[in-house]
Image (cartoon, rainbow, N blue to C red; front, side, top):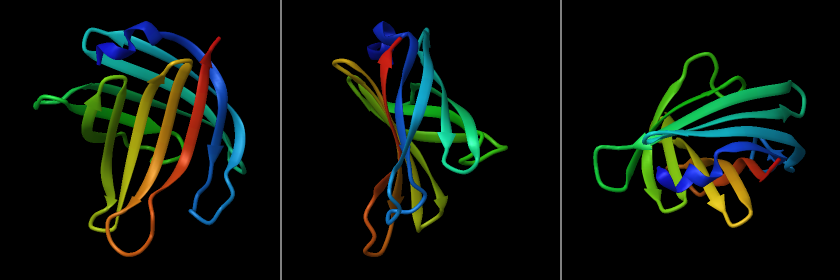
Length: 146
């Protein structure tokens, strides 16, 4: 997870949220603090839900047991409170994607954190595991250093 080492610090920007794929994304301010400690990267973030107000979450990611794999602990005050979730996935350079099946056999939740040339991107996707529905971004934040 060392690709995020030069991104440690405070970030702010815009977040968009939609519950369903047919909903229009609702923009709102977002902020985050990214820290790197040894092999772990932690992103503590804040966002605003269109009707439920201020929300916050934390994603701690580290290397998994296999080359290129990743494991994470995620908690969010709106998405899946009160229990934290363990997510698994992969890392590739300046990007890590982790997720879990929240409706086994039907839906998967995936979180991608990417270090871009000029900032950070945090994206949370609903991923259908069957049927004709397409994956969609439920949350997408673009952040710049403050």
